[in-house]
Length: 125
Image (cartoon, rainbow, N blue to C red; front, side):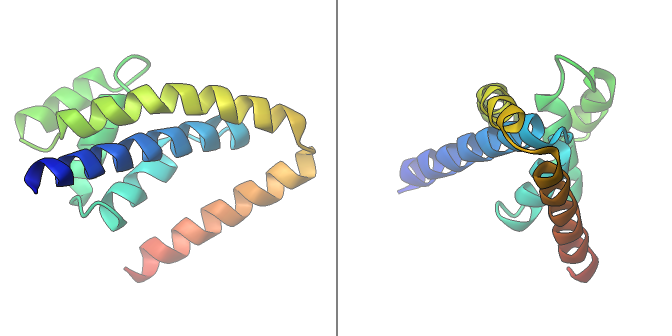
């Protein structure tokens, strides 16, 4: 049962990485805008664990020293960060392809709706 739960969570982390990468490539947003709220609201992470894990997955481009501090404090989920990072890579490619094919006005509206939705959810939680 525990192994099935781990597999299901791993699949969820993979989908999150793919979605965040796609949104990043499509709308030009940072992955943390999608990943942190998802880790908190869907996966039940604390805010610190979500931030530390997100920093881990961004180590190649940014965040090594910040992630190290969170890791030392015990606020990094290594498995989640690595799985999300792998799928984020492929989602970024997919989102970039989609973003280039859409009209700028559509992208601008989608970006604003995403940010407003996240802001409202975070404000009332």
